[in-house]
Picture 1 (cartoon, rainbow over the protein chains, first blue to last red):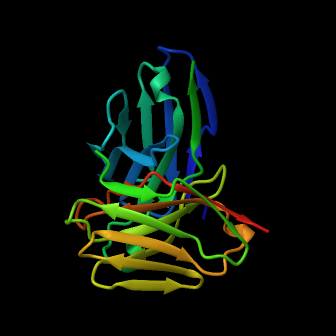
Picture 2: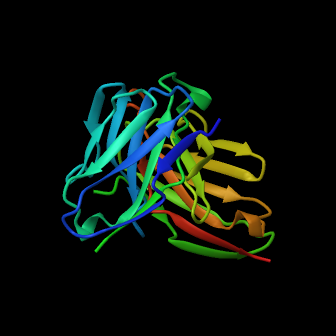
Length: 116
Length: 113
């Protein structure tokens, strides 16, 4: 199993350009998440999804949109990139089952995005 | 508003030392407290986790100490090794909230050989 994969690994955008980050998981997880990681600020939740066709806002949703058309995929879109969106983006997934090891979130390797 | 405060920001210890990383939380509804380990260029990975009904949990060389009344928890790494050099994040979540994790700001640990 590949776990959680992210595409692309690196990207450089100019201000105002748009792009989509793709996250895929092969663990049949119901929950999926998008985080951004900035120096000294830990990971902050952008959007999340509790199932196919459903999404919800996290802590820092402004400037981003998401879609979950298939259970295994979670897309993060930037419609008009800004330098403040320069960050490392991580996708994660977890099962809906509760308790013990089921609480773990599994993270992808990240996408490093630079907006000039 | 940072709901989980982590300290120190960086930590350097000698091999065999016992680094301690501390976290404090504000929301008393949190009921799951994991620690994640992140190596450069990789995503975070779960290291160890605790629920507030216990005061301590050990897994190998890693121990979480939990103080519910003080709303604090800490990670201790016994007999630290250079391979433990990584960034460590504490986090907290509430059951039934789609497992949303609130992360601390991270501690960069360096273990010198």
